[in-house]
Image 1 (tube, rainbow, N blue to C red):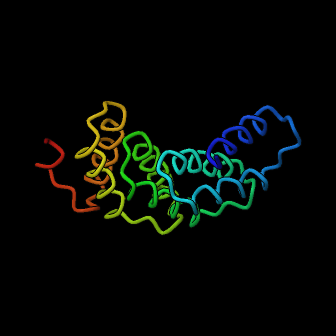
Image 2: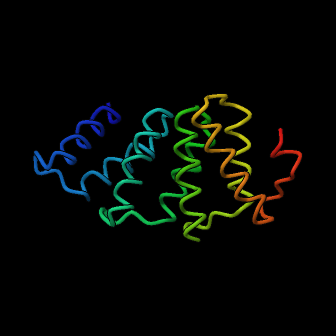
Length: 145
């Protein structure tokens, strides 16, 4: 039910309707994350990411990274792709404590478990970037594979 409520609040927030504030939306997303159901966590990650990018709702880089990590451990395909994008963004910004090794591991997990073209393409881009930087232990053989 909290996941559904979050979707409704998010829709109202985006429309500027119902008096939904960024803080209220962030609180609802955090509540969903603490309940830990995978699909809802993916939604919560999207909401927190949107608020973080807008500088609203007091969402920190650390909180965003933590939520993304939680989504990755749950391992659902679309949500993992979203989490990889979030971790990649934080890594590039040197925020949230995201390391090259963590980013590489997440990208490998997406490749190994997903097989969906969009998520795999994102993972390949991440691995390529890390390889070019000599980071994350990415090898030429791995990249070719």
